[in-house]
View 1 (cartoon, rainbow, N blue to C red):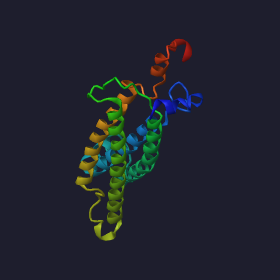
View 2 (cartoon, rainbow, N blue to C red; view 1 turned 135 degrees about the horizontal axis):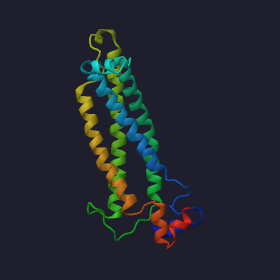
View 3 (cartoon, one colour; view 1 turned 90 degrees about the vertical axis):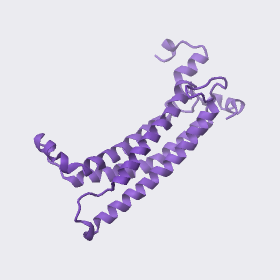
Length: 205
């Protein structure tokens, strides 16, 4: 956003350029990532359970195959819900960003390009996660029907492979976000204080 417009809010913004102490978006991002990755991982363990039963037996862990699929489903569902807040907080904090115009990232992108790609990527990943959740829910519903109970595997390999591909996209998307914080100093408290010429050892005590 235009720095002159943001200057109008200067009295309400802290050292990180936000009206609150800790940026919300990065924290919600890690919640989204964690829930999604755990969801896919537990479904993979559930699918491979017949080959791993001896491991749990050796460790003395009593576990049923369905338990892994339950964790997979509920984590995927939670991921789709929290990601709406993740993207919303991201756009709000992006509107308050005033990155330097002359800096380029390690990928050769300027600040505005990085923010645009990160913003568009966030909306795209939100849509993908919602579709993945619907797909997962449909598999759960179909499997619950008695006529499909001849197999104890709830999820399809295509779903799991798609989930792994989405994780790779999350890595690329997350790298853009990391570049905004580290290379452009967006809502980075320490970076902002250094720009203002303040002593971090004194200010951040």
